[in-house]
Image (cartoon, rainbow, N blue to C red; front, side, top):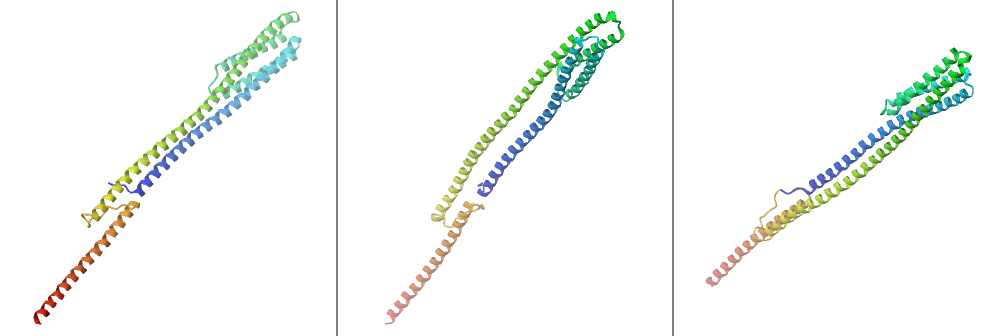
Length: 288
């Protein structure tokens, strides 16, 4: 069965459009998903980083207050300022923890939380010792409290530095994931090019095959019309270019057949009249 070229073109174009739309839809879906993830990640990282740097700033203030305490361990005002900064640091770490729940919680955040709690407890004990100890005990107790506070501040600083490094590593991982998206996009473009190339070659091969079939049928019909079967007509004519040519051949064959019939009829009439003339002349000759 011969396929109409018009139908074949429509099918080919429809398949190509379908492949293009499917590819664009896939790119749109992947791009929208990646952009949404990037937006969520950026927002989460922004809040987390702001809280992290806020913790670092408060820690710097606490260390500055501790420096004032180390110069005058018996100054309750300096110790009060250190206690206030330690409380602010504790609140900032809690805020940092709330932002970390929206992402993978770093293990170092729990360590920072524990070290901050220890610092606040140490400074609270320091302030309590200043209020409760006698003048003779103050030097010994404050020396111990200063050493404990210094150790706690160092541990908080180390934990915060580890968390900062971890956050920078997470940013590097996110950048790699972003590059992975662009690599996926590159592979999809290559896939689209390969599919369209294969489809183009396949469509060309099928088009050539159907064209050969149609031309073979057309050639066979013209030989039959001009040869042993002048009454041959093309059947099942499709509505395409080859079908129009077959229809033209059918009309031409009909005209030729009609003209041939008229010529045979005219020849028969001429032969009949010639026979009548010959018979009339014979009768005239016999009469004379």
